[in-house]
Length: 137
Figure (cartoon, rainbow, N blue to C red):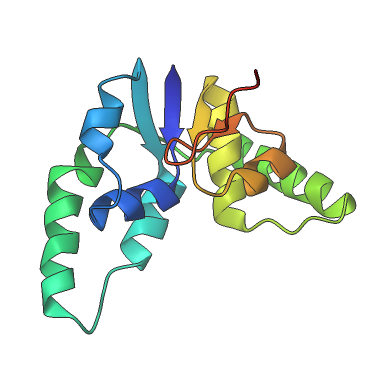
């Protein structure tokens, strides 16, 4: 499977609550997008030096080396349309998720995320690798 990793999974991996490296071995291709890079860096811990060191180590060894889908004008336009369509159906989705969804769709990627509802409202294929859905009998 070709996957775009949402920021929620990066955070879980950085906090050692999700084994990203082990999971990634099962994927055909993984990447992030430029919006995910910005979201991850915006979450830098500012008061706890231990967490800050862990954050920077994870950034340097994992996030900064993942291939990233560039956010182009076309992706921005698609994200705007997707967010507006979700809003017209009564759902509020943040810009970061809209950009990531549009980036994933532009490259034929499935979004790996904890917030599957956000991406479903945007019409982007997605799944939660931490809590996979139960298989029907």
